[in-house]
Picture 1 (cartoon, rainbow, N blue to C red):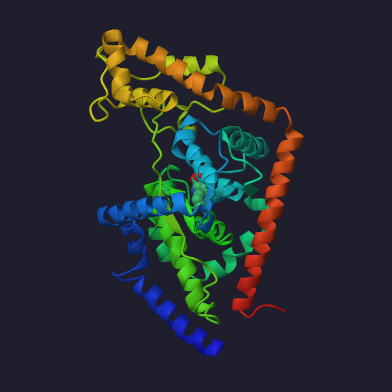
Picture 2 (tube, rainbow, N blue to C red):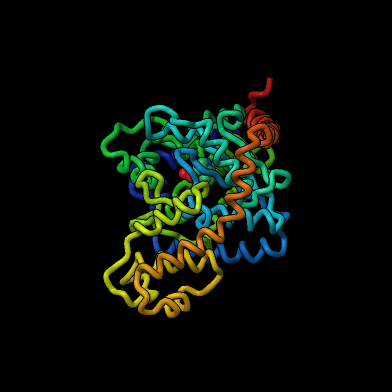
Length: 388
Ligand code: TRP
């Protein structure tokens, strides 16, 4: 029975993959994930999920993660960390991955990986991730998660991966570096990150939607090809995107805040360094401060940052500054940022001073992730008739 089902479903997948070379293909499905119509649908779905999270948080499991290629900064805080803490505090089971194997997709070597991993963990805890309620873990410590990559790779084609818009963009950002096979296949690895713990929800920005679509395709294809012994029980749920309600903060030069551009204010920086960076921030020549994100993006960004830190309204802040100019604006932003992050930085400093505790938190998270990954891999082996 299983063999029969296996044959028909593999025919279907082969057909899907052959069609993948023609017009109506999965690569387009991935690209379509960022189309306007699809984006509107994803936004609506995210609003519906948010409504359910408030009522039934226990029904949902969330996976999020960061690539430890640098220090987490205040853009990460407002863009994702605060949202994770919010979800955790709603009662949603939250898994946080420090994606160490993903570091080596687009560079030579691992950099100061150990310091960065523990620094990320200190930041998570300082921001409010509670290791009793959330699971913090690293790729490299979870063999069974990584092993999922093997069967998953059988479910995608190279052309599908080459057309993934996010992979393309990330490859372009390397400035002509040959694409490593790991960069090409990392969406599949990321699917393993999501599916090993059967997360139904991944908070993402819209640039990550193609990855989520890839994970959904893999989940579906796995069950079609290997998992139909109990049709009503797919091995993997279809994970969904939770489009962030979170804010996009620009760097001090007015472009995307990014570790590689040196325009970030790191969570772990002290108040003086923060003040110096904000003093150097780009504004414009109009001394009259107004909140106008379209025409005055740099000024608007600083106002937004002050607003997020103070809980005030950016328009009201702008009106208060009035003709005070960039200097008054920057003084206000510095005060707001340093006041808001002071307790987080204080906790962070205490945590960094206790490396034994951070090691303990990671060891406990990795143990929990290993148990989960082994259970999932066991189901995968069962579905694939490879349990000996
Ligand atoms: N790619 C994410 C980043 O750059 C990190 C990450 C790895 C991730 N695996 C994931 C995010 C799975 C969501 C789901 O920060």
